[in-house]
Image (cartoon, rainbow, N blue to C red; front, side):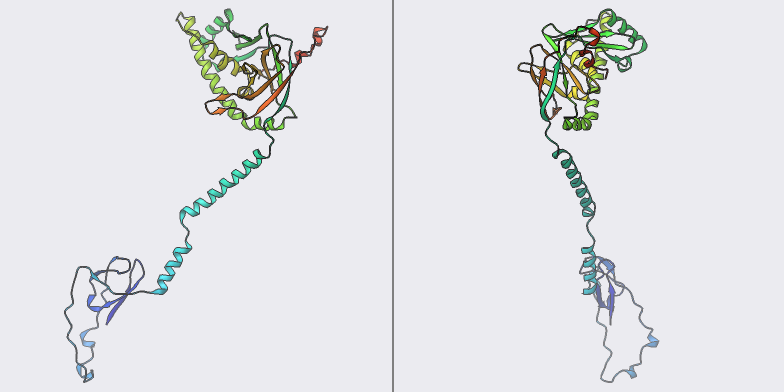
Length: 348
């Protein structure tokens, strides 16, 4: 007589002699340690009598049964069970595939959308129009006191210092003054005798690619410009107050002009581009709400290139435009009819 049972781990069907009932062994298929079930034997009183056995048959004596700690167990493999388990494992996809396939599909879709939006647009290049102005000075741009982060007492001190003696930053082409007012620090730009202001109509109906690019990149560029401005403004105010208190502090005029005055008077496009002539690279001084850029250039300049200004991560603007500058219109006889006044910048 034999005992037949299944491995609880791999479902293999095993058949062992009943002498192994209650003993431990290992499944030959999966090596799992298991216990042979102990099937109760029938009572002695219910066993058939010896006279009922065939005469030619004698009751054999039971041979001694070895009792190893982990005797091997013979198995009869069940093909149907094995096929069923293999089929289930094939039908169950891995977790990596379940998660990875949708993610890859989503990324491909984003790539297709991005390519369709950018690849179908014309290049950021072409020609832009500009014109010279007759005015030497541009209207003031105000940096509000709230941007300085100063206390009320320090604001009053710095206002008095800059109202009495404006910070003057002078270069070959332009002079920039920082002036203390009730509303904040006023930025005043004045072209030198050998220079003039030109106005570049950068964002217009004819330049849709530039308008679309600016709409997309404006939040990023504005955030970078504001961060640069506020950091430099805080440092300048601190140094200026120390100077007012009698401390010997050197203020870098170029840093104040580039990081404070220029960033305060321009917007995203003016922050990202620079005008290139034969010998100079000039940043726009002012950008108004219509996207017009005010650039101080030598008076005899007729053309320039508007391209990306470089930063630590590369050019801030990926295009390049050729700008043709029209000469300034003759001043009208009646000052009230001046057309140049209409092109003056608005406060950003």
